[in-house]
Image 1 (tube, rainbow, N blue to C red):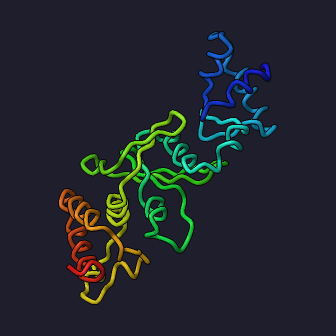
Image 2 (tube, rainbow, N blue to C red; image 1 turned 120 degrees about the vertical axis):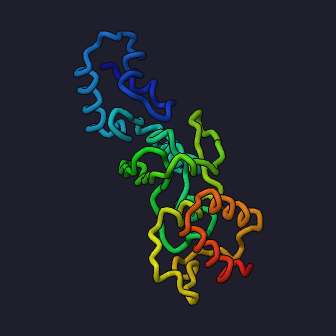
Image 3 (cartoon, rainbow, N blue to C red; image 1 turned 30 degrees about the horizontal axis):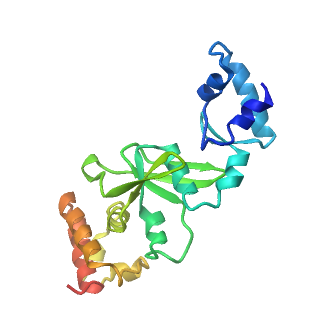
Length: 218
């Protein structure tokens, strides 16, 4: 397998075995031949496996790993039908500040975790009716879906267990979870309340009442 094939992949965010076939211009090449080349490249540290069948060259990784959009792009490559949310978005908006979290996303697919060279990527399942509340951007040609801060907070609380004892009047949810919600904008509060209504969840109704009583003072 010629080295120039690998070099030609340096400008792509990721590649697959099919991409290599296309570059070779020979659809009849044996799959075993390509797998052998991939194994050798990985062993030599020239490529990184993102997940089964998906790879990135070491040069691309080194050139872009410090970019703000790099981790979100990798998340979108791993599961395209997903949007960044939960701890990742809350941390980027200074709502969660006490520790470093994996890149977290929400999907209609099953809950999964990927660990690779770029990092740890977690995906939580949510029902189709609540798969919304995100914007779409682009990084190096890869579409990236990203939750609004209100939807990220909703997802974070909706997907957490809610114990009956936490219904007590003295319980302060935001303080317990170390959520910095004092500066939450009014439009974000309204958006959060909209998602609570859409969820038809008794738990989320209780959470909204708790936040309005303890931190939003409504």
